[in-house]
Image (tube, rainbow, N blue to C red; front, top):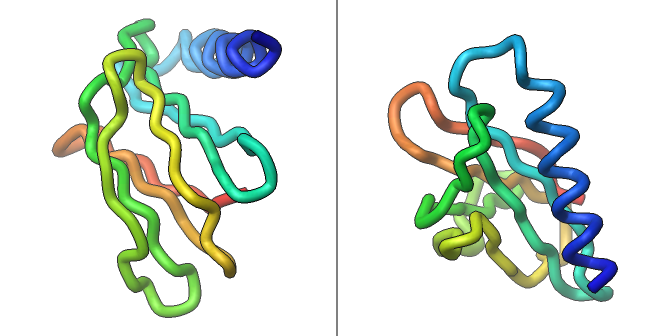
Length: 102
């Protein structure tokens, strides 16, 4: 329950901060135990980032480590890589976000 509240709060804060921007894509990463990471994605207009491709890359050499999609709630769970990594959420032209992992 606490995890869902934290995710909802993060998405709300991202959307609040994005009010002045156009229809933009955002995501947050939250540790889900010691070995997993949960991504929560949304657009600045409040639409959940449902069914959007997610890719995890090794930060040192750009190697693709994992790929999947967000669920109907804009959430995606993946195993935390052993080293530094980047996460990309790609909803198409003009709607791609890539950030460092946690």
